Length: 115
Image (cartoon, rainbow, N blue to C red; front, side, top):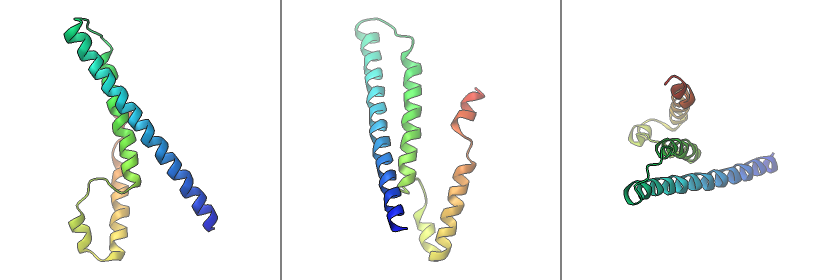
């Protein structure tokens, strides 16, 4: 059982590194598109119509990929002072309830589909 758990843990670590690299690549692409759009608009006086839409799309991907990375490390926003006040057994129940609340948030694609 431990071998299976270690293998799965290594697999998740590899996926996490891949997502980290992908997030960095998307962030660099966002920076390049933003700077390129500003240079073309201000210096070359050429307005590129696709820059704003591309920036919004890349920014959304950075947020979604980054949120996934943060959730794996339990780094999402929370009030830790309230959690430390309750006993340890209840802390795990509060954490589970918190995850259930996160799942109740509407998915981004359902929000964007209605716009």
